[in-house]
Length: 429
Image (cartoon, rainbow, N blue to C red; front, side, top):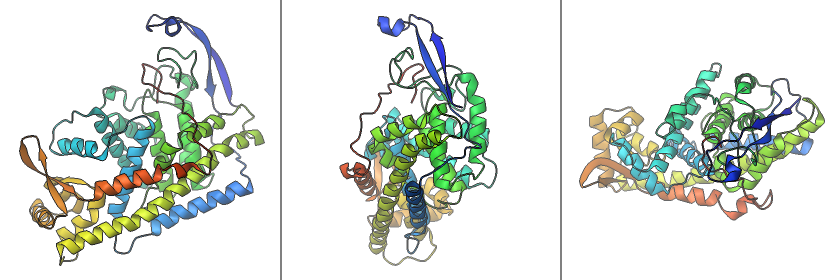
């Protein structure tokens, strides 16, 4: 059964205050394994989960007529990635992301470190989805690769793709776990717990949504990395949903909702950490709060994403009216289809997106600029061939505001104050 270990933290001289330098006894939590868990779910919750899975399927079936699947998929994945970073305290307005993305498109380095980290999260989410699409065992190397992508571009990049070798904790002091809100398992326990988690990911013991929720909660409980645990754990949600075939096209932007429901999100993960026998009813009940929150967040994300599929269709149709007559499957036709998910492009990146030559792509971009669909961006003192899709950033901001509205949290009660998680040498996200 799950247990705690009482351990001693020896006094050190790193902190500024006596409290930070002091020693103490603290308790680490070691969870039960997921494999073999006979999870019991009450009828009303099971019905909500079934409805949520149906809504994910509806999201993946909606808007397929006259709308590029790739454009909507990229748009929703971008929204999900940005929101996942926001939960960890990283937030940048769309224009900041655009400037950083522009610099990176030109092969340079962006000075805005926050924007770079958020853009790295988008890349990691894309990698996770790609891995999940492959019909093979999801391995430890796959998990480490996702984490390495997340850490790319940060000052802690050397910790990417490596399990932690020291104790970490959440809340309290940056220098010791004496007043921490939660202390994960000791580092020597991490490899076996991760192997169990991977075994559970590669099985189908529970329904897809239940599996995604349990994988995320267990990963956050293990907290296996020195940094970026939250964002990695949320990427795993989409690994499960894609692998199980529930979300073959579109990612429901669950993190956009969880970012608003921060207090409930933390409460659900906290309740998940039980101290009952492995297959007891008490363990199942400890998971019900988290399952309920996750299910409601998923349903909210799906309903708003479906609405935005219609708005993206309207935007794309307006572009096509501006351009005029377009030959089917031409470079212009393909480019208009992918632009909702690619708000900033160069000729080279657009050519890769639409699988056309740079010559044909350049001609298509020129036509879209003339039609007012794309606008060439000024970078520094010179004008480079970097283009912004007009209207996409406004739509993205509208989605963020919609999912972050106060009414998003009415079903689960008022948001609680989240546990502070300031960056430190061992206290992690």
